[in-house]
Length: 354
Ligand SMILES: [Zn+2]
Image 1 (cartoon, helix red, strand yellow):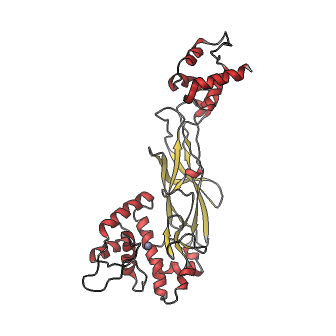
Image 2 (image 1 turned 120 degrees about the vertical axis):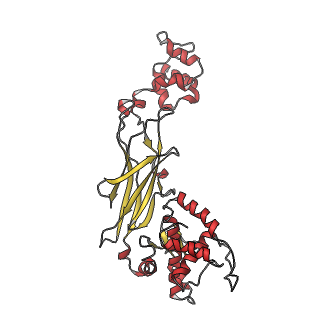
Image 3 (image 1 turned 90 degrees about the vertical axis):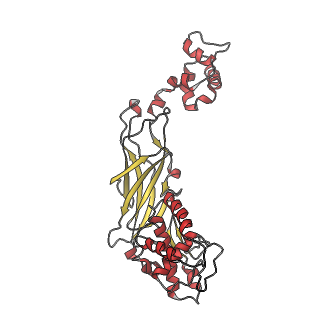
């Protein structure tokens, strides 16, 4: 009874300055401050209760056993993990592609957190043993994320697909409360790496025209029409080049070369993403740059294909890049590729930025 009442008062006095976890140890040794005050309560505690609670005065009491065992540095849960800067935790990639792993971090202590000296990247293949990825390091950013450039994963010859999980692991912290010094691991992200040389059927059909242009790209067959919803094919950040084969095959008046040119156009988008670093941040920079180079102009000396409602500079760039490597493309976003645009688009096939 008494304990319960004291706890109630302590919570009220502490107001919002204390988390529930921190309140309990304070309450166990704390008088109510009211009529049933306990005579042998330490004065210092009573003073604390009579004043408005502030984090500064209450913080020493927070150093209970439970608080001391909390990690100095910790990771948020899996749903905050990122692949290449995007908010998904699983993705499809082609063999020979790396990812950027992003994991949100937090600290429980102070305004100047004690950070681990090193953050390693670990991986496991098909649910096997976790091993450290050589040379890969996580960088702790003030943005709240630890970012790590993970080197390309190559699926061994003869293996069609591997699922690789990645996570971060901190080097053990050597300062701060002793019980809080430890190494921690993050929740993983999961990447399905496809071996393009093992593709069969329509995956092989649409990979063939981009084999030399985007060798590390993957082809996902969008059988449910859930990825490429606006068009018959897209470059998707989570699933790579996604082709809705049924939709493409349905256009019977189109040549096979034009159908395959769809894959080349998406491969140009793949280049736009990876030539700029393969991250959302790089993509934004590419998008901005595209607007400076690719314009909605018309051919001064001939007919110009009408511009589609969703014409955009980065789409025009992919079209211009496509025209450089195939004469079969019948589907376009319209407009004219002027010499400057054609030269810039050609850089995509050189692995460069325009
Ligand atoms: Zn496009």
